[in-house]
Length: 631
Image 1 (cartoon, rainbow, N blue to C red):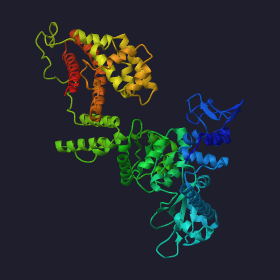
Image 2: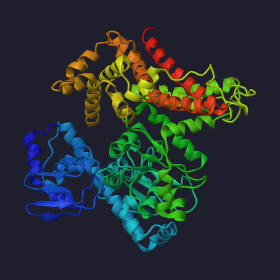
Image 3: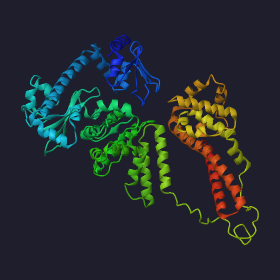
Image 4: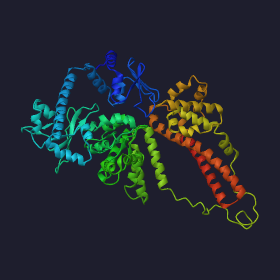
């Protein structure tokens, strides 16, 4: 469909923004405007203003800004078109249809919505009637209060094959079948799909009933029965409670994914409103997309039994290819055999929130799962662990995220299988032996051991005045080519000492720009630097002549990009780590050398030698990084 700017302006003009926002936020008049506590961040003093004349809202605390449509997408979590349609319906405007077929489809869907809403109303009446007493007792035993029951629209389907069909006889039988309310088998008379069940409406993001879940009362299978897929309902693209959880998540900056309806409702009863559930299937890619539109790192909180943990791992596997910078999953582990309902009954909302606070990042859940998958006693078993973990990393399509997962798994593997370090007080093989009258015995102490190598002048200078020369040039040149690394290493780069004042000024300017601009590339960074006096130095450092590091190379063709860029990012990460660590090691080495020259004891010698070996290893890594770009 074509929505012209004029049509959208007319829609905005017909909506009173303060009234729209006032439905979910308490607003107060302040002169010609309105004020409220911002719904997008927690605050006690109102800084959120609404201007009806200009048709926009603005928060001076978090910079949230928008019009009526933006309010519906950001605060309600609706898509743009759903927001437009809902506002147009309230404003009495017809949304332009793309073509007659689209208009006809929209009309048919509207008719089906009348059917399912009629069914929802009738189910509610049955639950409120005298015949609904056993079902109401069941809900009371589950701890579901009347306000919660009504908020979620609980109903009752009588144990009859034709009661609903008769109640909705004003609708054609074909529509009742198409909406999923009746079952039609061969040439038999259609009959009610839901019989003898507690009915739970399933709503879309706009709060409209589109389907049902039915829980059997008493014994029988299946315990839960969902509506089939219909023109209104696609279970793989729908999340239960999204209409309530989406606005709640704006307050908590959190979304909890649980296994089923009753988990969501039990949490709501305890005051936790930001929970959703898939609908009888493993979490799908489409559902992950819906969740990531609300928060960047949702918390999956599945049952503590084997089935629940398998469901969590299936979700993890499905999410891996879709990961991108900043977007992931976390996993809250429930005690074995318990679900969220059990936790809030026993510990209340605070106890459940405490479990959420301990949620594992996705990388930790994958690691724990694979380490527990089997024995790791033989080289072959350890190699299999490494293969499985790196296979998970390789499933990630985003190159930056894939690189960091591979590095994270390698670090954990190295730490798990590292050789046990000798005890600090244990004599090391190369430590000086006590000699009569020497520094190990009780006699007079002589001068420093001839094997002792104090830090050279270069080591002291790097530790004291900072990094200079080609080391700093290579670093800044690499960051110019790969600006994304600055956000990953912002803290480390901020405390890195650069000897040359011009280079230090350039790095500070780059860090300021990277902190304010997401998704920055080399050209964009240079464009911002151009008016500054550091620009000429930046263009000079981009010339790779004399800098033999992979991250300083210019990629000449598209064929080079994929593998070479991954190598460059990996090498740049390691290079930054070495540059930050080496001055600290050398400062400690200078202290250890001075201490040993004063005490001449075995422990001091061992410490000095250990730090010296670490310094040499860092220098070797720098040389290896330089050589790596030549192969």
